[in-house]
Amino acid sequence: MKLSKALMTTLREVPAEAEIQSHKLMLRAGLMRKMASGIYNYMPMGLKVLKNIEEIVREEMDNTGAQEFLASALLPSELWKESGRWDTMGPEMFRLKDRNEREFCLGPTHEEVFTDIARNEIKSYKQLPLNLYQIQTKYRDERRPRFGIMRSREFLMKDAYSFDKDNEGLDISFNKMYEAYHKIFKRCGLEANCVEADSGAMGGSGSAEFMIKSEIGEDEIAFCTSCDYAANMEKAPGTPEILEKEELNPLTKVETPEAKTIEDLVAFFNTNSKRFAKTLIFKADEKLVAVMVRGDREVNEIKVINALGGAVDFRMADAEEVFKATSAAVGFAGPIGIKVDCLLVDREVAELYNMIVGANDTGYHYINVNYGRDFEGQLGDFRKAVEGDICPKCGKPLTIARGIEVGHIFKLGTKYSKSMGANFIDENGEMKPLIMGCYGIGLNRTMTAIIEQNNDENGIIWPLSVAPYKVIIIPVVTKDAEQMRIAEELYNSLRKLGIDVLMDDRDERAGVKFKDADLIGIPMRITVGKKINEGVVEFKLRNSSDIELVSLDDVVERVANELDNIKR
Ligand code: ATP
Ligand code: MG
Image (tube, rainbow, N blue to C red):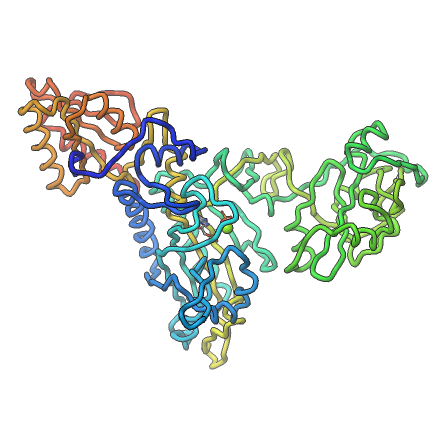
């Protein structure tokens, strides 16, 4: 492509709408433009990157034996009513009606569609295992679209769905996807960590997220400092801290009129927050549930929901419900005499000596409370992990970092096949539900994550594999006929080899051209200037500051050599 004929507008100013580096650079490099909140148009250069990522994803999916498929984005409500998700998806789903008042949605994900295809097309175990994937547009009315295409309302997803006859088969399908995802992110030049995620009521190690470590990430991840263990915060274990043993003192009720929060109590008793256990009350479907964690810890709601065997509707109890459980105002709940369906006690609380808890009486707390002597409950791990908690794999300390989720693989089991009646006949002639898995990668989010990890003060540094163009040729003086002739010759030779090459033949100052080349991040730059009199051009890699002088006869080979290094 010649830049004089291309639609490419770069911006010198940082657009006010962008907060993070990748979003700023995408706008400045003219890769995309915003149309409405969370809705973007891809400009030619941006589209090329997206297509390159798409191709890597497609190749790796095909390598696993998965087959490409394409479903409609416009989906009838009936399918979603069968799975029950028409009601549970909530406002994130874009809903619409046709001219006959029939209800539809724009697919936010496609489990229902693929389950429907499977129940119609798969009859026998002989057709299994099967893995179908698509690269298709998804629609989600995100509560907070942000960071450009990182969280947009229309985006491209590769979603794959596997169908197996048993759990062993599902394990194999899941592992194939796990391996393929590692290859995809590596080929995209991304350093992605695979993180154990919570799989809800499904249990087991049925869910893994692929995360890019980043300050701006919306997820928190616990990483081991010395082994490869990594888990989403929902899943990371909290190991009880064992405190020094103390003599048990007699249980005593103390008036604490104004002290409701842990901070108030710490000041009132002039002690530290480890001395306290807080009791939080939740409503889980129809049940009232109390959860105790140490005063300096936070409740992990996912762990609580899992301990309850799942809950569709889970929230903090309101003041009225708290009163029902404690006969007291909010702020005075405690384990002794509490009226709840279930009392969950974090193991660490059982390790406390002479702790302070609410007395279920407005204005009072108990001091010198001891687990086992004064109260009992269901013990477990109910708190959020923190920096310094112990790695469950090797025993070394965990650190907490932020991450961006770029991919998610998930063992669904029979969740959809049972509710939608997707069955097959097994070897013994018995009818059984298909065992499913689902596997997603956000292509646009991957693109922006690549920029987030690969940039400097001058712009984007595209990894060769996904770069919109691999080489840019810059004739320094466009009016110099000889420079232009040689640039043109190089351009044609590279194109003949099938190499994506850009030529900046605009009548601009060389400085402007160099700035733009750096901003849009083309991996290789060939500068055709005065030195052509000596038969030499300048060759520079975007990710290095070295400028090499390469003879005109060798420069095409130099480019080809770099391209040979692309990771496969
Ligand atoms: P998040 O927690 O970020 O909302 P999710 O759990 O809703 O993600 P999935 O339903 O697992 O995401 O979708 C699979 C992949 O699709 C994600 O890993 C991510 O890469 C991408 N994705 C999800 N939502 C968006 C979005 N609004 N914009 C861009 N990509 C998205
Ligand atoms: Mg989401």
